[in-house]
Image (cartoon, rainbow, N blue to C red; front, top):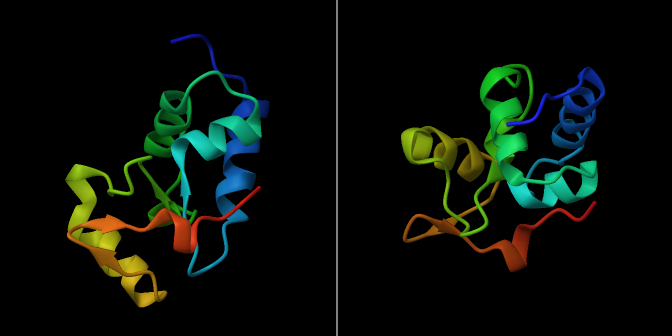
Length: 98
């Protein structure tokens, strides 16, 4: 992976922080809004620097949460009124547009 600048990290952090309760965005949505070449860059940033962010509001393009966080992520989203059907969030209903 190419070097990631502090500016890119801060842009991703700001975008994630801007997702309101009850809404979700995908890694790809954030990558597009941040001008990044890949959703994987967003995933890397989220994995290393998101403890103080609403990380649970970022999901995969399939509408499914991260496999290793499925239960916790769906519980946090459910508390905000975002419901899953068969483990998948209906993006058309709750996707946050940047």
